[in-house]
Image 1 (spheres, rainbow, N blue to C red):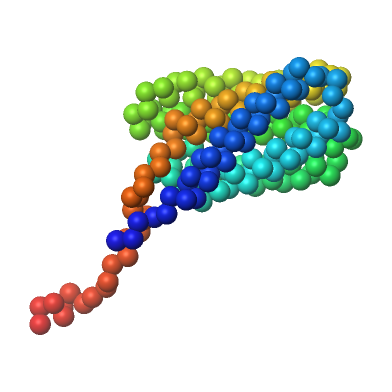
Image 2 (cartoon, one colour; image 1 turned 45 degrees about the horizontal axis):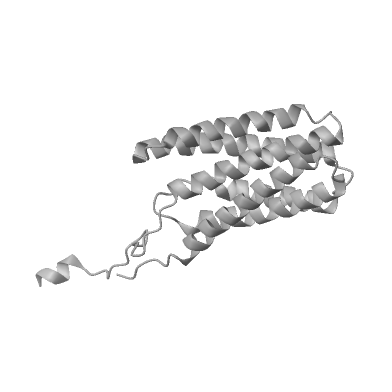
Length: 202
C-alpha cells in the first residue's frame, strides 16, 4: 500500500508557524509604534491576511493525522484571502473597516479554536485547556476590536497589535500541539483490486 506524502503537512505546519511568528512580531511593532501610518498598517495587514489564508488552505488540504488544527481552514482561509485582498487595495481609507473586519475574523477563529480545544480533549491532549484559554482570549480581543473601531488611529493601531499578538500566539501553540506528522501515514481510502466472489468458488 502506497503511503501518503507528508510534504503538504510539513509545508502547512512550517507555514503556520512562520506566519504566526510574523503575526506576533507585527503585533509587538504595532503596540510599540502606534503612530505608524495607517497606510503601512493596512498594507501589512493585507499581506499578512493573504499569506495566512493561503497557509490555512494548504493546511486544510494536507490531511494531517489528527485533523484538528486545520479542520475549519477551508472557509476561514478563503475569508482571509478575500479580506486581505480588499485591504491591500484600499489600505488608507478603510481603517475602521479593517479593524472591524479583522476583529470579526479573529472572533470566528477564536470560536473555531474553542471547538478544536474540546476535540483535543477527546484526543487525550493534556494541555487542551491552554488552547481553550488562548482561544477565549483571542475571541475577547476580536470583540474589543469590533466595538472599539470608532476610536482614533493610534488606539486602533495598538488594539490591532494586541489582536495580532494574541492571534499569533493562539495559532502557533495550536499548530505545535495538535498537528502530528507521521512519516508512514496511510491514505484515507485503501485501493484494492475488485473481484467477483463467485469466481473464487469456481
